[in-house]
Image (cartoon, rainbow, N blue to C red; front, side):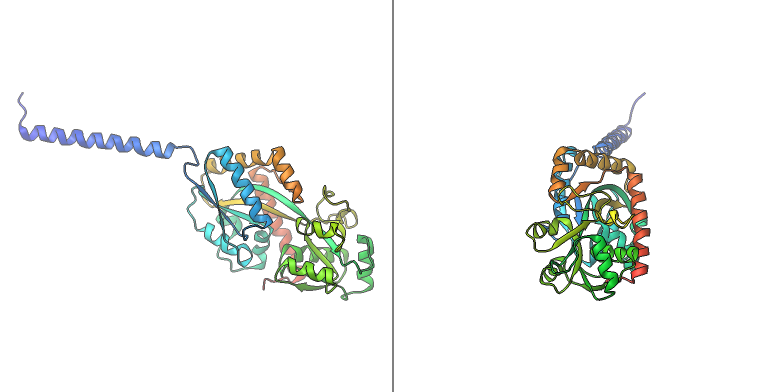
Length: 330
């Protein structure tokens, strides 16, 4: 059987096309099969560089780089109580290369800011919890109280005459004080500041008399005797400050600031699991425990489902405080 030139050319074209298809088919799975992550991962942080939240993200990023062999890049997007950063990541590709660091502000925002442009539990998948920081209940040195029972008695004897400060309306510190008021049946007048640092200065100066603040931010001032610490706000006593917990006087009281990671909704479960497991390995190291302890923080190791339930519970409980207090974001 003879083959014409036209048939030969046709056979060659078919062979070339088939070879090209094979090469393409081989190339695509090879890329898709590359283990995650195969390029840098961005963690968007809703805090300015240098603060406790930013340092937490950078510590975790370093640990993940060691565990997963890829760079984890921090991108700071502070503003609007965390809404700005969340809005950016909510619309990012759900491929595991865009992560959002969240804090207690984000669960509070679900009731504080109705028009956020996203829903935390509908537009994101939980990745992993990171840590929590206890707050400290402090008073001005001139206030004649040295314990939580004495403070409660003083507030009841002087309803509305004591001022408490916070880092702003709707902040974790504001809501911690509102929870305290609600559970103790006391009254205080809220004085919001642009930052907790400004509130601390006025607490020292006596313009306000009471304040809830992050323990790491106030620890050195307390040790220097600038203000008096009455209690911390976690379930158990602090390892860095020898005072009781609020719950020892007010059973059930707890108010802490947590930090965690989320990913855009639809991120592959295998990617979420890999990130979660790597993060928990980082959190389980002695180096991690020691690092958090210096900041008055504690590792927060949960399964992804436990983390999801934690977020939903925090959203619900915070909404109750917001409703009772009438707290609003400026």
